[in-house]
Image (cartoon, rainbow, N blue to C red; front, side, top):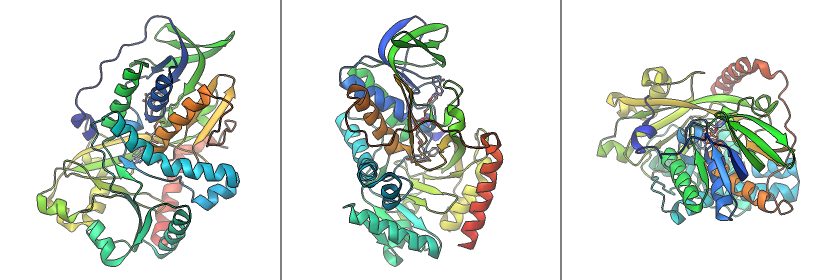
Length: 419
Ligand SMILES: Cc1cc2nc3c(=O)[nH]c(=O)nc-3n(C[C@H](O)[C@H](O)[C@H](O)COP(=O)(O)OP(=O)(O)OC[C@H]3O[C@@H](n4cnc5c(N)ncnc54)[C@H](O)[C@@H]3O)c2cc1C
């Protein structure tokens, strides 16, 4: 296994397997950022919560991602307000804009050691049409009071260490972190607040009983008044039809050996995390150990060795030719969940069931923020909720998604090539 984060996060937290019947107020399925943050915020409000993961906290996308703490939803603020109306749209934009702040506050409040840095994020344009779009995005963010700035020319070169991009939007709300350390930090904080966490505890069935729900786990039964399903790209058939509302996409990351001091100074010297806004997203950052991490679309299978991500290494060396003799030592991948409309989805398909997933590759901040929203919803169902709650809707022809994804990738490559 060549996942750098597993190598550097220290030992996993020892958690009990669920193997004896128990009762709880809230049962959470999935211990990624969504489930962990929900459990933490519920426990802090004095609610009895029990969290189940088929593996362990951070095993899914939350412990494998690019570590970029991105502000904003995938669609631009004006699109969000057009799609959901001025009031809800504005609240959704505010939630997504303040999500990085919530992450950094949680890290500080619970003293999590997860290499968090708030040096901003850069969205970079490689084509004139993208640069135009970026200017529009920047204007919309600025109109809503966000600390953003468009970098070009020398300023951009100082931020990236090359001249490959036309422009980039620096958003000072964002930053980066070690995602598996953050996931484990959330798990420790939830435990300290009184939540009960179980590893190696796949929930195989959720069924309705009188006045509560029954969850089957490892041959034992947990009963709960409320269930939260937070399984994102690893969604199975636990809730009927849920799998068909998402397209799981395989993302992958390659990491270099630690860079020399001179090289570390020359590559992303200001340490903002960067992503390109092309149809095929490439993202990179230099981590606390001075390794370059570069991510993009991966093969639709488990990635375990850098050789299978040669395309990312080649691209990195095109951006920074000095990397030519620097080896890529680690490679790994994971599943993120795309939705048809590019928004995260919250469903409440039955009384006492809440489902939240589909972050479209932007879940570090959003999933953490959604956990806080879900906890609030459970404690105060009539209170404000800053995301639309929709019915789970299957994507038409979902069975064809592997071909659809390939077609989208090819189309994206073409679109990028043509600008
Ligand atoms: C390679 C990659 C790079 C990414 N880079 C970024 C980035 O830089 N910035 C960003 O914002 N986002 C990024 N993302 C997306 C981000 O990681 C996700 O949006 C976020 O982690 C989703 O968190 P989650 O808690 O919803 O799901 P996950 O972290 O995927 O957790 C789901 C959990 O559910 C568990 N599970 C599933 N079924 C069951 C069951 N039946 N019973 C019990 N447990 C179950 C799984 O074991 C898993 O642990 C990236 C994703 C990938 C894959």
